[in-house]
Length: 108
Image (cartoon, rainbow, N blue to C red; front, side, top):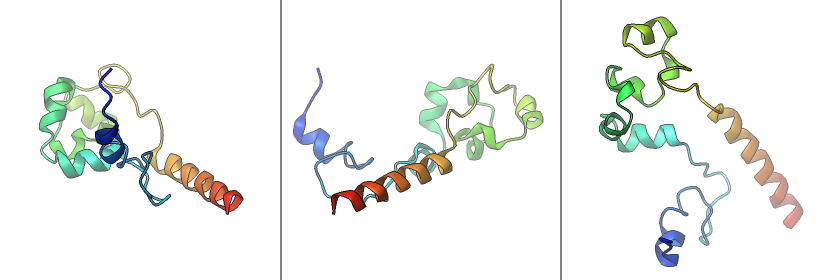
């Protein structure tokens, strides 16, 4: 519906390495790293996830880094007010790297 082949291939698809460019296999998109880098003051997060507005910006990007007692002090309960992380980003990155390495060995 909103497809733009040139924009998609050379823009957002480049970031996770799914586009037509020759992306290195080890570039794994990390949404937490991206928000810390491009939204350090958590303005975007604060606008769209008001449940986290009381948490210091440093932890807004990944609230599960905070101890649950400290989260309680800020009025956030994981699993109720805000979800637990769905995946462990370090583990899933390693799984992707392993898969990409296996694929590259079978295609060379």
